[in-house]
Length: 343
Image (cartoon, rainbow, N blue to C red; front, top):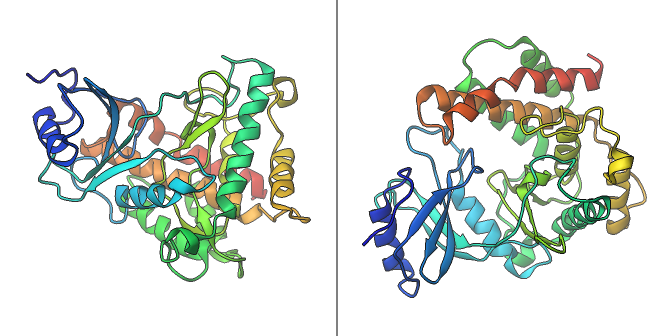
């Protein structure tokens, strides 16, 4: 007998696939879609002997090079024995015939994540612990030698920001639904100001922010870094910029930012403090120049949200109602970048 409480995936096909790939795990399987995974739908599978996590590509026509769960599986598998906490990967299936789209299954970790960076549900000491863990994990990630974990070919050669700007410009225009002047102005500035050089390529998460991290429910130790879809080899400044960019947005579940918030009273680091602590861990004497990286991260997030909106309009968004709301933020991210650049 198959138990079911959601119809987003074919549970009979999932059950058959699990029997094939993980015969030691027993059903019957209950499946529940998480509220996360707007890009790649994510499900909790509960069987008679525990839980698993299934992450899949969405249905329908997808943008080229988007929803790369294969890369997520590869990078988390490679990081398993490093100081960067990730779930254990069980298996990857690239055959869409099995359950309808390519997918992978990984370990379920019973932790907690925080959408609101103010983290109002915990006290100041716990909040400080969360951010200390966050900074330490980011520094640990950027200390990983890609070659030592089998990821030397995980990214293309050449200037990281040039490659990324080219990629996300194509993605933006592929999903564009109407003209957004601030985006056009921002893209023009970015095209004219790409940094010429960069240091040794490191593993870049690509979407580093609090809600992509999972913490222990009692001691608030970081137990997993999630959502590696945008990861590649490149300039580690992109991850610092991603976090700072997100904090500049309005507070709340949608903006997920800290604009106007008294961080010191909450025990949340200011932007400069965050960068300084990161540099201390890595033994860096000079603070990195983040002007272009932060502007680029605004642009990339706007391009991502435009893609989310387009999927909603096409009828293949993971959460259509939420996707439409997220799409409304495209212009805001572009305007925020222009304000920071004083354009």
